[in-house]
Amino acid sequence: MQPLFLYNTLTRKKEEFKAIKPPLVGLYVCGPTVYSDVHLGNCRTFISFDMIYRYLIHIGYKVRYVRNITDAGHLEGDRDEGDDKFAKKAKLEQVEPMEIVQKYTVGFHDVMQAFNNMPPSIEPTATGHICEQIEMIKEIIEKGFAYVVDGTVYFDVEKYNKDFSYGQLTNRKLEELLEGTRELSGQDEKHGRLDFALWIKAKPETLMRWPSPWGWGFPGWHIECSAMSSKYLGDVFDIHGGGMDLQATHHTNEIAQSQACNHKAPVNYWMHTNMLTVNGVRMSKSAGNGFLPGELFTGDHPLLEKGYSPMGVRFFMMQTHYHSTLDFSNEALQASEKGFERLMEAHNTLLTLTAASTSTEDIKALQQKCYDAMNDDFNTPVLVAHLFDTVRIINSANDGKLSLTQADIDLLKTIYQNFVFDVMGLKKEKENSKTTAVLDKVVNLVLDIRNKAKVEKNFPLSDEIRNKLTDAGVQIKDTKEGSSWKI
Ligand code: AMP
Ligand code: ZN
Image (cartoon, rainbow, N blue to C red; front, top):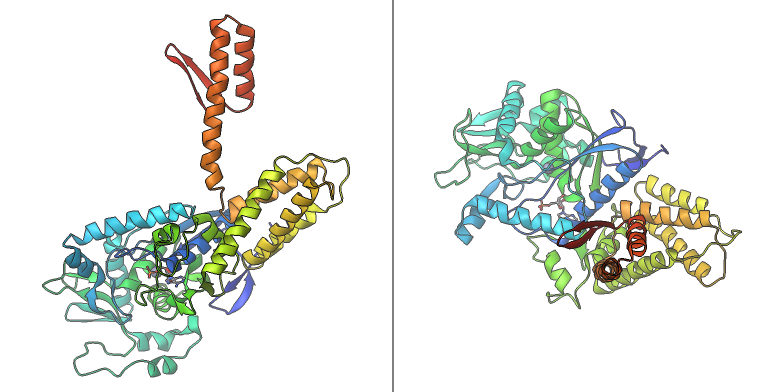
């Protein structure tokens, strides 16, 4: 396996990736909060990690990819104050909170499928892991890093910071972090300004509530990821990811919770995707600038000039490094769609190229450049540039301006399969359905001819057709009712 380098948020360096137990890799990514539809910004993060997951598999790792569903315990703001977002939405729509969860989980899966994201290996929910969260909170209390105030449990950040470094993920000292927070008022239950809730006491009107050693309540948001990642990947695992907006609070608190329990840093490599922006402003639910993927596909949004295909959008995301911001614009998306079409048309041409006896190109070197780009912190924009070199070579070979041997053509097909389809996760769109429809017609036509041959007792011809179709990958089944086929 060639060395793979990735940028580790924790050390602020590009480091060679070393799995704890190769070929196994544990990958945890913070998933969606399912009280509303995911917007395109959320999708950018999930598409980036899908590409990372795909590449790790491609180079030979056996990845256990865990991506959670946050379906409880999400209050307004980082300070765990205000209303539970699920309950608020349920009241608004006059349904059960779990109907909200179901509706938006299904919607999320549909969107992931439209973008051709592979499902994770495990997709645990917060509500399905209340026991694990309670056990972890108990352990944090036992180790002395949390305290209970009237049925609510808080993590003691200042105490933790005496033994460990609280702001290490964002490279900030406790004093700096304290400066950025408001003074506690006399009404605050918390002992320290940075303390955060592990368990929150249910109010009389709280709909989603569970019994606990501290009374009826529900978990804080951060504890679910610590409890579920350690359950499925162990106390120390390889890679933890999410959007950059999660670094300062959610991931910082995850590290604190796990380290308070195990006295060990829970994650070897922290990876963060940068934000999708609109006119320089981060796309978010609260900013109101979040296109829903459905709106993007139909073009039904005032800021959209037209609808865009899911693969055009996916390719748009691949053209920027996951660690850089990506600004949404109609022009950029239209350019990406054109680029995607050129890439797919060149693949069609590649399938029809005839080989020459000599070669003028070094396709092996081109393949290595593709690996070098991906091994350099999953640099998809550089990969795309190399793939456009393959497009140029294919088109020039087709025009007779350069020559490729059969081995070159086969290697180009492998490059396409590996990098375009398997790693970047792109697939042919419109053409797929068109091709399928044409294929249906052609196979049925051939079967009609075979049936006529059988009626005329021309068995050598009917057998020949059957054998040739089998060779081509079309399996025929003859029954009393007639013949059926499948690929
Ligand atoms: P949420 O459902 O808001 O908790 O977000 C789910 C995931 O999407 C998290 O990993 C966030 O960091 C990520 N995310 C949220 N907004 C954006 C954005 N504008 N660009 C990229 N990722 C985002
Ligand atoms: Zn998380």
